[in-house]
Image (cartoon, rainbow, N blue to C red; front, side):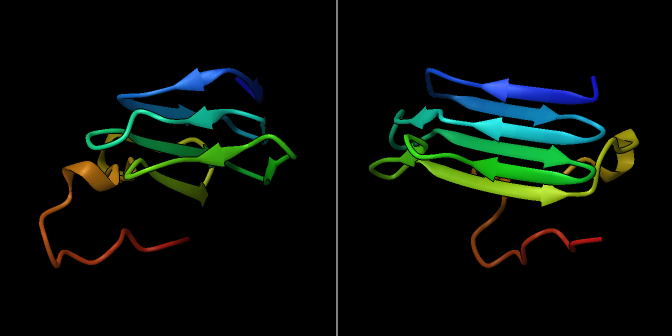
Length: 88
């Protein structure tokens, strides 16, 4: 897909990848164990209403569509002290 417009509450492990743009007003509110990542080729816009609560985790990448070997790793799957994925 080239664009995504994301709304509503989200929890668990969620990864959204598009070739162009992501716009979001999502509420990331699952607490411990919730890790949400966005990956777009051009831009990611977090509009008023977007919020990450509690111990939920959120990451955003400007990489666009990736091959299986380059998919960013959600924070909840990283080992303690492991560096964040390199940005392109």
